[in-house]
Length: 403
Image (cartoon, rainbow, N blue to C red; front, side, top):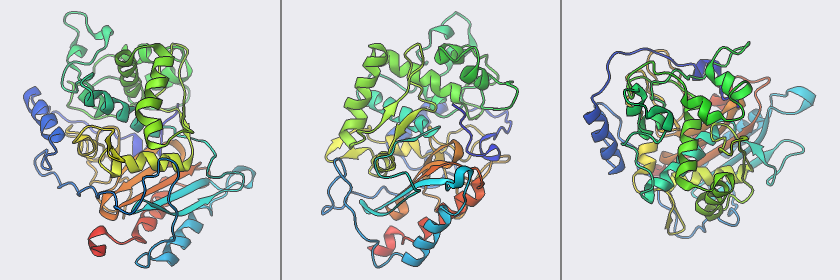
């Protein structure tokens, strides 16, 4: 369950003393879910999400495959795909195991390392956090969860417990204020490590919910796998039925409708979905997941995610020390002091599900594009990988240039 993309990227822990008022936080949330594009002062306008091309079938059963269009720089695309597989790690295997590129709803580029292919399941690592976020969205759509009310965590219900005001919105923004940030160091010194490999491993959500409060909820951003495990347990309680109930819900409401039939989530011994780190799926399935967000949560006429959810996803969390994180997705926005850029050189419209060792789903509304990269990072660094992904995107024209 180690969830680092790169230590410099994820250990972004700047301090701030400027908490927004509770009323302001609620207004921000309401505005976002109403699809407002000016959520916080100085915020960039959100790039419109492109519609499904009328002549392109939805990839529920299979992706429509096509060559890159004449307006695509095919030479640059091929060069960067070569670069993606150039770094070789243990056993002579390329660090990159799979790349899939979807443009205007068609699969236009796909490459795999030897021994891997379109049906190979590959691990999510922290991309699972974005799957967890989608499950919350489905329950919000149905009125079974609310973002702005105190989170359903029994351990915080004691009168006077300062954690009682933490909302699901705070948790999705990684702004709970809990002392549970992902400082993965050896020997284990953080709650995240102890949850993953120590005393908390059998019941990760209970262990995560026991964290004390360090900051007023909503005021301080810190990336945290334990936070996602608290969210996962909240989903499980809303769904009911334990592990089997959760698994059935995930397939019925998310995986099966969009064609992610190879997806396999993992659970801990207590029956909680390990939504911080563990979903296995093919590269094509991960592209479907990204495509759902590119298409504003709609799929073949069916609304999977509630209206406004994708805009909520890709709007920066309001904590003053954050510029690159939305609601369980990373954003290619200007970082705050102490943060690192997510994809330097890529369009600011890009938002990403990212996991340890460079797993990534990059959604680029300005280019009607989804890029999936899966593998390891034994010989590569995140800046090198991020540069390659940015140049893959650069090979495709902006949507406005094709109109």
